Image (tube, rainbow, N blue to C red; front, side):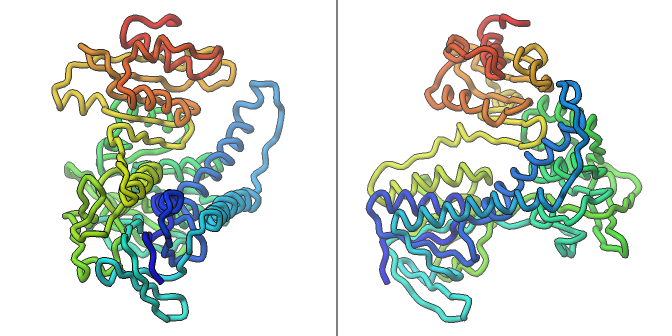
Length: 467
C-alpha cells in the first residue's frame, strides 16, 4: 500500500494533520496502536479531565454559592455517575474523530508504527504480524508520556501512586491526596478531588506554582487555592515515594537545605511533567536526530534531519499543548501539499482549567523585564465587573501588557471565571499586531465578563472607566 502521507499517532496534532492533508487531496493514513483514536488528549488527558473539572465545580458551587443565589439544595456526590459522564464525553469525542476519518477517506492502520527508512513505515498489529507501507511523506505525531521524578524511582500502580491517568479514575475520593508537582496537570486534578472532599497537599520543587507563568498571576492564584483548602510545600525536593499498607508516603527536603520530612496520604499523584514519546519508532536507525531533551529535531518547516520525514506536537520543541499541535498539524499538511503553512508561536495561549481559571498569551512581565522591553501594564479586577458580581465570580483580574512607545499588545494574563474563553480576544488582537487602544475601543456587550478585558486595555493606554 502506498500513501502520500502517513501520520504516526492520532492525537490532536496527528488527526488534525491527517484531516487537513486529506482535504488538500493527499492520500492519507494514520498509524495508531490504541483501540481508539484521539491520543492522550481525548482518551486520558484534556477531555476527561475537563469533564471532571466541570462536574466537580458544579458540585462545589451547589454546596457553597447556590444558597446565596436563593437556590437551596443539599448536594450528594455520586462518583460513579460522575465517572460515567466523563467516559461518555470521551466516547463522544473519539467516535467523532473516527467519523471524520471515514468522512475524509483516511485509512486507520491499527498497530505500532516504526520508521524503516525515508518513505517506509512498518506497522505491527496486535496479532504480531508486520506490514510495510510506502509513504511520500511521514509525520511523527506520537505525543508525550509521563516523565516521572528525576532521580527517584517510583512504582506507579495507577491505584495508590498514580499518574494523571489513574487520577482520572479513583473509585472513591481519597481523604488525603499528595500532588507531586505544582504545574497545570497537578493543580487541575488536585482541584477535582479537593472539590469532592479531599485534603490536597502540593509538593513543588520551585518556590512558586505554575513555573513560567506571570509571577503576579501565580501568587494570587496560590492564595485563592489556599482559601479552597490547598496546602503547599514549595521549594521542596522529593527524594522518595513509597507505597504502604493503607496508602503511600512522600519524603522531601527543602531545596535550600534543611531536614527531610515524610508525609503520608491515601494516594499520591505524580504530576512532574511530560516527556516526548519517541520509543520504538526506529528514529536512530532511520537517521532522525533528537535534541538534548529527547525531542525530535526540526527546522522552521517541521522537517526532521531526514528528507520526507516531519514531526509535530509534543514530540518537538515548544509548549506541550493540544492546540499548538493542531496548528502545527494544519501547517505541515499545507507544506506537504506545496502551500505555505505557518504557526505564530508568539500567540499560543495556555489555560489552567481550575476555578477560577487562568489564561495567558504572549509575554509575562518577567520576560519583558529580562529582555529590557519598556512596557506598560493595564489591570482591571473582576470585583468591579457587573456580570462577575451578579454571578458571584469576582475573584481575579485581567492584565494587559503593552509596548510603552507603540501601545502594541505584548501579552495578556487573566485569572477569573471563564478566563479560557476570554483570552481569545487578546489572541486575535495580537495576531493582527493590534494595540491596547484597538482592544479598548472595540464595543463589548454589557454586562459581560469580557468588559474586564476592555477595561484592562483602557487602563493600559489611558484610564479605565469603572474603577
